[in-house]
Image 1 (spheres, rainbow, N blue to C red):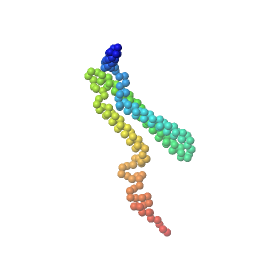
Image 2: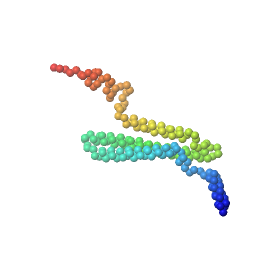
Image 3: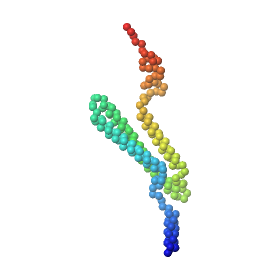
Image 4: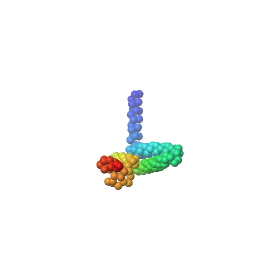
Length: 188
């Protein structure tokens, strides 16, 4: 009886192994194995979160604008905040749409490459180093957009020719006169 149970287990294990080895079923979602696709999904989530924050900022700026006292100078300040927030909202919405498009492009690319790898003479997928190169490109893109956002936030004078001191105090001179001397006063 024990010999029969061992034989049944061996037969079951053999059949199960053959089924696993013999399966050549196509993966319906090969993009789920792609690290670039996963990174783009992560970036899309961050872009959507940024869009939500900017939308909240737009709403609060509009509420502040409605409460502003006319003819007091507040209205102009709050109007500028609303306009700036609306510009940031447009940029954030463009970022979300860009990631959605790139995700769709990557999904189609991965699907095409996966199907090509299933053909007898097709290229291997994923290729060595291809995913790493794409991930590096994404990292460089994120760093570039971060630098652009940082430079846009700086309150430096704009449209000042290089080498001029417009908007900045001159070196070695103070606002009181030449080389730190006080201006001469006339005594009567």
